Image (cartoon, rainbow, N blue to C red; front, side, top):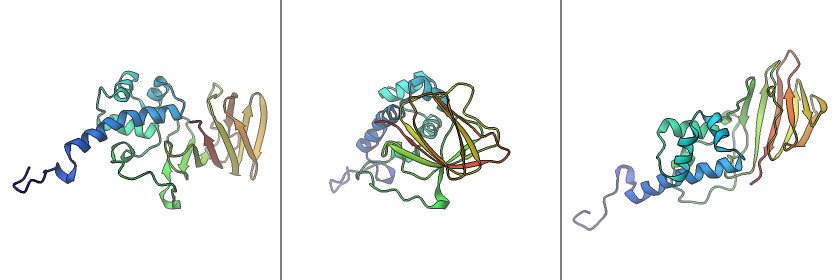
Length: 205
C-alpha cells in the first residue's frame, strides 16, 4: 500500500489474487481439454511424456506444473501455453483467422504424418481441421484406431488408403471420405510420393 492508499501489484501489474487465479485455472483447463479429446489420464500421459500421477495432481490443483511439464501438456493438447496462463479478462473470440504463413504444427503420435492447423483451438471449438501431409509408406500403426467423434478427409494430391470397419477405400486426388471414428479405422499411404489432404476431426463435447 502506498502513501496515497493505492495497492502495489506485482511486476507487470499482476496482483497476487490474479496470479493465484491464473495458477488455479490451469488444472481445470487441462482436465476440460483432456475430456474433450476423450483421453484417459494414461492416454494423455503417453502423448505428453508426463506421468499420470503428475497430470492427476495438476488437474486436482495439488501441484503447480513446471514450465517443462506445461509445455509438454500444451503440445499434446494442441494449445499454446498462453491458453493456460493468460487472464481471461474477455470472452474468447468467436472467430479465428489463420494466415497461411502462421499455421501451427499439431502434435500427432503417428510417424510420417505432418499436420498444420487451419482451425481454432480445441477447448473453444469442437472441430479441428489441418492440412495433412502423409509420407510415402506411412500408416496409422499396427492396431486399428477407435475413438469418439468423426473425421472427414479430402485428398488434395497423392493416394491414401483408408479402412473403416473392414471396408477398404482408395482415395485419389479430389476424393473424400467421412466416417464415424467409433468404428475401427486405419490409414496408409502405399505410394512412392507424399499424400496431401484437408483432414477434419470432430470431437464430442
